[in-house]
Length: 136
Image 1 (cartoon, one colour):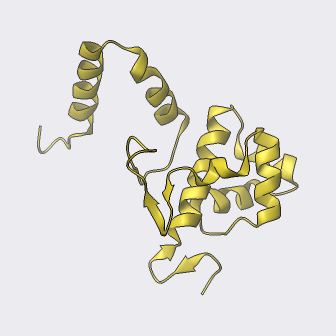
Image 2 (spheres, rainbow, N blue to C red):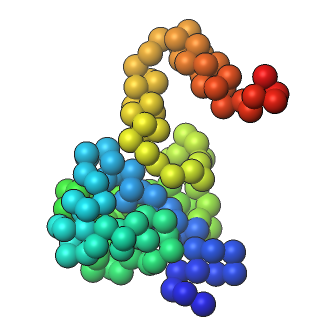
């Protein structure tokens, strides 16, 4: 069994921390190679960290936090105490299980700036585009 993997894949906490690394990296405008160079890693290793397939050591997480200029606790925000991998309702407006991209992060940043009526229009548009052609 590979590190960080249970019978059903990576541990939920490893996936959560990896997702937080990915989201922060993208929001700061870095690519995986940039982060890898700063940490002395390959982009492939960064990719494994972000997917949660490889666990991030405490010292490497410390280095990542310093590079991003955030507290180490940032990567664990949204996890409920006593329930590893379970997102807290109060700290996270929504839970998702999709890879963060520049586009999803930008959409998430811009949506709250729109008036409610335009948010609804944007949501309806995205829903209609996400609906498979057979259902449309």
